[in-house]
Image (tube, rainbow, N blue to C red; front, side):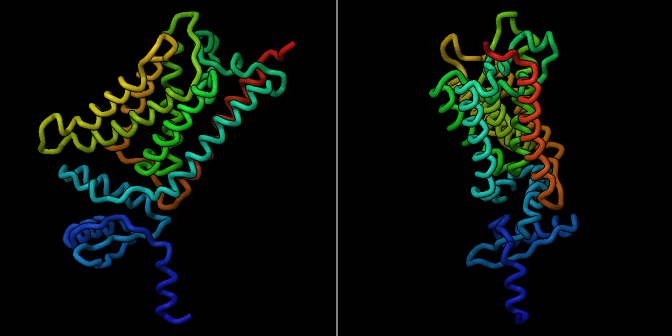
Length: 306
């Protein structure tokens, strides 16, 4: 292989991170050099592109976002999000889990009433049945309930994945949704019972809102501009999260607040990260394992149908 061909092959898996003026790209490249992260600058017409190996992309984006947040000048708007293809993998897994649980519930797999075994309720808090906070996120009461959460959940999850990286995003959504369910079951009346992924969907919305809000806090702008992400998230919460008496408004609110809290922490302290994709692969595996273990506990405790 010639030197030119070898060089082209070595850069084949490099991805675009920033497209902006040469001075800004040079500034970003100095930040990455100080952090010992690889990058290259490529002139592209009137603008310059900053690229990095695909294996380092999540770490590089996080490093630049933290730098942009410290600069307080909205520089994060120049940083390219995760590619849609990578973000779609988690959404496909999410859809697969919800459809699988709906099917197993429909056929009463193992002779178990899956709704009774996995629903979140006040009894879960009193009996320390922690797994219900997770299993309830995968259960639905009918096709329309399921379809709405499939569509909105996949979309919100992909947006979070493009900002945080797929593995970290879905583990965070699961954690925030489960935390909201745990809190709700501890304060709800004894006859309370709820199922559905909507709590996690609003947790994803909160993650996005909290992350964007925390990045804008130091901007020299009017408070409305700085708080726009939270205002937009709250408006969507009010529009989509409230409804008739059967809608779990408290669960939606707690999910949103859990997501806002976690998203603002990520923006302030930095997203959990690794120089390789291992952190996101491990996070995705942890999310899948948590769901599997939660259902294992639920099915083990369930009373078979007669």
